[in-house]
Length: 110
Length: 154
Image 1 (cartoon, helix red, strand yellow):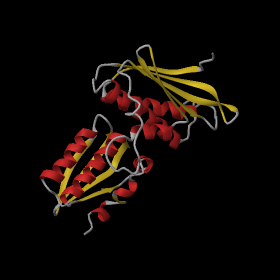
Image 2 (tube, rainbow over the protein chains, first blue to last red):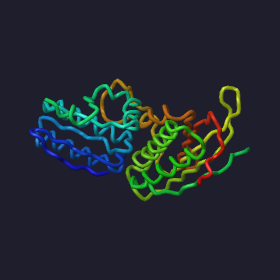
Image 3 (tube, each protein chain N blue to C red):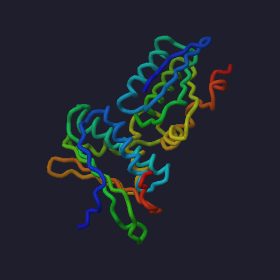
Image 4 (cartoon, chains in turn brown, red):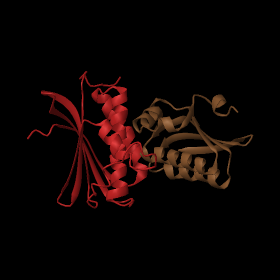
């Protein structure tokens, strides 16, 4: 898995690629929590277009990101979910709790 | 007892870095057996989650402990008929898994953790766990509903 951060206005956009699993999810979790709790970015956007796979530890990291965003009053936004990621989030019954958009234009819109 | 035809056997270390290797191999195996794409993804997810549970709970995160994974094509009863299926057996020598830790959680409870067993149960037709002679043994079965000729490559 690779994570690259971009900044747009007051938003942070993380471009994530590869597999999010037990080996890699701690890195994602750390990046999300730092941006939300320490940097206090008003909106953190996660680009998942290039993510091939996510497991329960990856879903748990997304849930932690969402909870941290609620704690600090930020928005936590996902976009670019492919079939595999969508299936796993649907199976977890957690898809509905996330703010999800099809593309970046929608995800960063005011 | 007919134990079915052995397809693949792996001896792994409990290193999370190995999970992607198993996923790739199993995805190819399930495809070769004729599982449709969504079922290939389901089998891969279930085995990945089961291995994650072994690494985290049975071995407490230690990365060099042994895990054996055996994949067989079997015929087993389902709905009054004998059908072809993929049987996956995962064995480890870790601590006994506390059933309470494997019982999952209410899905309405929005919090991290506890999803792995839910994914395994939703993805597989049979999920059996037992402890025997110092080993944990998890048996997973996924039935093949259509059995086309195995893919023989180009």
